[in-house]
Every structure is written in structure tokens, then in C-alpha cells.
Image (tube, rainbow, N blue to C red; front, side, top):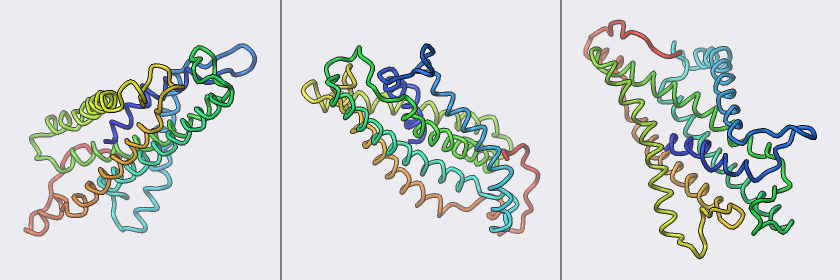
Amino acid sequence: MFWTVYAQMTTFSVSQATTLDRHIGSSFQIPPASLTFFVFGTIMITVVVYDRLIAPAARRLTKNPQGLSPLTRICIGLVLAIIAMIAAALTEIKRLRVARDNGLTHKPDITVPMSVFWLIPQFLLVGGGEAFTYIGQLDFFLRECPKGMKTMSTGLFLSTIALGFFFSSVLVTIVHKVTGNSHPWLADNLNEGKLYNFYWLLAILSALNFVIYVVFARRYVYKEKRLAEHGIELEDSGPVCH
């Protein structure tokens, strides 16, 4: 579900950006797709903040040399994804209100007088979520897989990204069929659609996914602890993600 949310940053969020005022100064306009820079920029900043501030504090509090466990990091990423979709829905509601107030509902070619920077929070939240989810998930696969299956485990990890984008396409198809042409959520003219409902749907699905994840994550026993219970000391498992 996280990667399904992430898929919106390169699709519908970019579509939103094309309708908004993207000017910096009097002549320069930000390309809509360049907003994804905020995702990658946030990832880099989050990794540094985690490494220098969060991880040392977590080590002191939890007495765990890893700081936050991989499953905890994934958990944080899932929470940020939910908040990102809530922020995206609220921003889209505001965008539609501004378009309606200016009589632009049926004029998709005219820029909505609202700054494109209103979209930044959803990009920042998804970027922060990716930093926690991606690294936590990769670390989990590398630490917990059998010693001779690390390459396969990395492939399985990357397949979750592909599945997230695939599920996003499935959701879009279902929403198109269910909402029909009379009151479409995902209209060609975003000013006539209800994209915010799609974001609310993703927020709800992400919340359900989070609950299911927490149930299973709380029951999971890490390999190191399982082996220790049998008196087996864990060998060096190779590279891990910090």
C-alpha cells in the first residue's frame, strides 16, 4: 500500500500541479514533474536526520544497537503515507474551491490562481515515508532471509514496489467503472472530478493496511532472537542498511 500511495506522486499529484500557478518570479515556471524533487530531497534529509539524531536517541532509549528495528521503521513510513493522503485530499478540496470561486470548473486550460507549493506537504510526507519504509524493508529482507538467499530476497523486496504501482492501476480502473461518467472521481478535467475522494480512499486503505501490518509485526520474532532461544549464536549476516 505504501508504494500505491507513492505512485500518486508521479501521476495525479503531477496532474494537479499542471493546473496550478507554477510561477517563480514573473517569467519562470516550475515544470510540474519537477515537484518530485521534493520527494528525493526529503529522502536525503530524512536519512541524515535519522542517522545523526533519531538512531542515537533510539539506541539510548531501547538499548537496541540497531536503534529502531526494521519493522518499526516500516511502521513509521506507513503512518506518514496515511498523513500524506489526508494532506493531498485536503489540498485538492481547496484547489477545487478556488477553481469554483473563480469560475474555472469547466475551463481546464486556464490556470487556477493557487500556488503549486500547496502540493509540497504531500510530497514531503511521502518522501519521508519512503526513507523509513524503503530502508526498513530492505534491512528486514537482508537480515531475516536465509544466508544463501540474499539476492532472491532483494528481488522479492523490489517486487513490492512493482505490485504497489500495479495495484494503483487496478484501483484507478475500478474507480473509473464504479463512479462512471456522471460523477467521475478521476475526470480528464480535474476541476470537474473528485480526486479528493480517491485520496480519501487511499487513506482508508492505507489505514486498514497499517492495522493489519501492526497485528503481524507485533507477533513477528526476529531471527536473532529465535536462534538465541535455541542457544545458537547468529553469524555475520552480511550487509545491512543503516
